[in-house]
Image 1 (cartoon, rainbow, N blue to C red):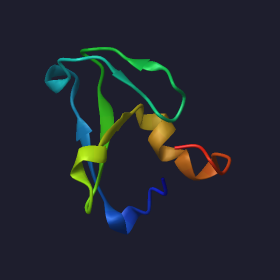
Image 2: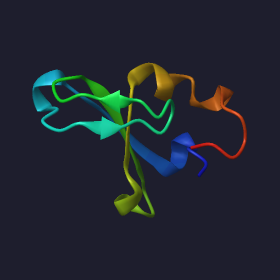
Image 3: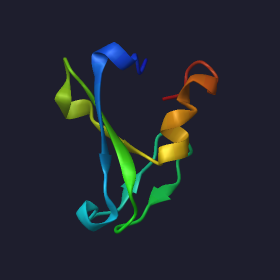
Image 4: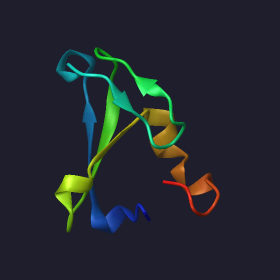
Length: 68
């Protein structure tokens, strides 16, 4: 999936808001509950939202093709 900034709504989740653990598609690591992170929601497919570590989201354009 391409994460084009114009096609994705992005918001930062504060640590006190993070009540669950998630899997980051950028590094495949765990985002533990209580950890601030970024949520990216495709505007045309909100059910495909993904939770990312802040640095993974920032550097997503450096990823090889075929990865999230």
